[in-house]
Image 1 (cartoon, helix red, strand yellow):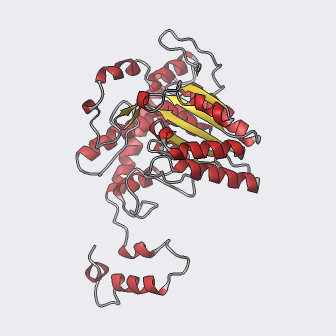
Image 2 (cartoon, rainbow, N blue to C red; image 1 turned 120 degrees about the horizontal axis):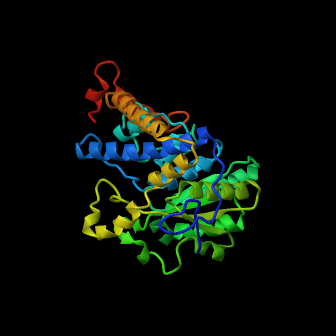
Image 3 (cartoon, helix red, strand yellow; image 1 turned 135 degrees about the vertical axis):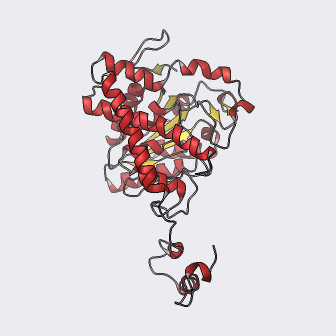
Length: 364
């Protein structure tokens, strides 16, 4: 399939006009990409220092994340996979709470109950990823069906990795989305690796987007390192969904620079020479070149944005790392609207009746 491209690269011409961006929009996109990259560097270092337990990096995929996330409207729902935390931040989620989720402290929306990297926020319409591969996709399609029934005008974004397309949940979601003409955009970040399994072992077809034809929906293959192409294709897919024309499958072709997670060593299963060509099509550098050529952002403003991002990270980290752990009795909140007697008795045992502390009554 032809790959949608707005920015020429390595002798390959552009085939799609760049979307119109004003200066504020251009800064938002660049800042989002810079934040994703800077967080990668900071959090991977922190994991190696033992300050957090786990982290899933996104280096090399900044255009796919920021471009698709920027195309979503504020009322749209996001059902992410592992590497879409940047979308949540671009929707205005506080950075200190983002760190709080990794620490599992009182700043964590989930009160320390969820695994690291499983960010969520009802206020920002961002649902926690599912650790079980691809199960978030049928959930996204179901939410889109609900939006269609309610005529709410919301569009649902369901993200998946290339490995997830080998799951039965991918088939079920694609089929149901197309048959029901649900208002959703299915976004596959094809970063060429499903942990240690290369994309060549996932499918014999010409990529992922081509699979859409069998289900009766459009499939678009996009240069995932071209943020303008990602933004353009995602906006078009969202417009189709909002107009009642049904779902679109987007395949964002990119490359995972690092390991699957901080627990993974990619040198054990891949020749690192395969990374070299992808370093030449760095998504941030490609966007920077275009911004300077169009005089939207100059080198001085670019450097100032990066300094702002790093300062924001340092301030948020200082606020979050010293925050207290969730109180023990928070174990019993958000479970039932009215606590049943069995849990009320357990809570009383944990918290104590005044004769002892919560920790003393129930050591955790």
